[in-house]
Length: 217
Image (cartoon, rainbow, N blue to C red):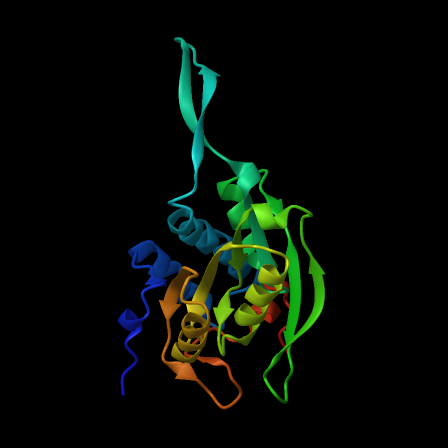
């Protein structure tokens, strides 16, 4: 039966021709590492723009060439970007470009090649992380295991407001994530067909981490 993402109210598949164009180039196996890395940054800006639509602002006094005025600025102190290592690092620059000065945390997870289950190896978060709205970022949502575990880690640290952003998702990952975390907005750049027997997204783009850091075999 065809996967119907509309049943998950917290899942948002972004629909913009420029985003689609950039993701298509990202998929191409002939796209060089330098281009791939820059595309991930640009795509993160486009997705982050949508995901950050509801952030809080406050009025700040600005002295323009004409007069003093009160104008809205984002409450950066209430936000935190958390990439899932290592591929999530590729999205960090784009998110930082959107709102420079926002704090970062890092969660390290890798996928066991036999079980395909996530294994935690690193976690470093701001001391006041529980007071922030956290934007969790990872290019791929495959089985959903890493994203689900990262959310568990954040919740253990008292985080109550979480948004997850990925570039490409498989139906299996969307189902697992949304059924586990129906309260967390999930922003998706492209929804792909399925996972293969190695738990890679099809058609996907291969291993995002390897392609970002030039370690593909």
